[in-house]
Image 1 (cartoon, rainbow, N blue to C red):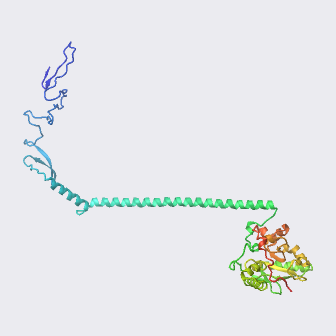
Image 2: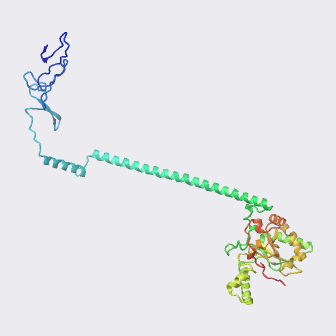
Image 3: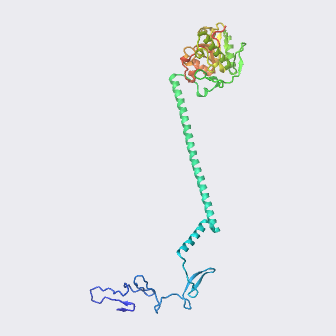
Length: 401
């Protein structure tokens, strides 16, 4: 069956063989396009079949006068129609000229000689300002986060340190209580150890000249001996009751200033050098076993008094045999005084037995020390001084006349 656009083969009735469409000349045979669509044939390689006019010319959109028009940008009013009559020939500049012009325009644009347009410059400025604000915000945020983290860590460390301190304090209290239970002793409370009347002064706990507390003293008798004004009332009561009981104790030493204690110590050094022929260094060591080194004597804080019997004034162990001393040893605790260096305690106190040296510690502490037969070091839980450091006397003179 023939067609105006080509030849089409159809299958005859009764035929068993397959017939194919015969391709037309010039290209592959395609199906017939539907009405209203363009039918193209494949042209030889490199060419394209375009829709043409009945006369064989290419169909193009033309002006009413038959001329072809194209849109061309206008310099002032946008686009204007360009016809074949007013079309100007176009010439392409040589490649080197184009490259030079493009390079110059690009360089001018980048270098800013021509300058950016005001609107473009404003955009750049806004972008930079925005980036700056964002950077500042991020920096402040990071600093705030770091500060918060450090604050949290500091609080955690402080809480841990406080918990550790509380745990250690509880542990120390528990150990002290266990020690008291083991020893069967009642010791001073931690809150009382810093009281002025329980101040510990010995070779293990010396004072410097700057550490010696300022003592407000009062004169106790006609001999001019002075004591801390805070113990004056209890001391007077003790002497009054002793005299009422027929006893007559006498004070032979009380408060000593730093200069007085230094004088006693240096005087003893000179005597040892003269009597034993020792060097000054050796004599100082020897003198330290007889007279307290300045800063280690309780007489310097105004809480110690040396009391002897009016019938026997020698400072030796026979002093304890007098009736005056017997009364004081049995009753001094009632007035807040203790026998500071008792018998067989030199390994703890560092001072040999002195039955004339009394120390004020307050009535409650004096009662507990007396009833338990312990020293002030033991009552305070302090480290023992040791018998190797014991001195023979803490008095001004070995004998009084």
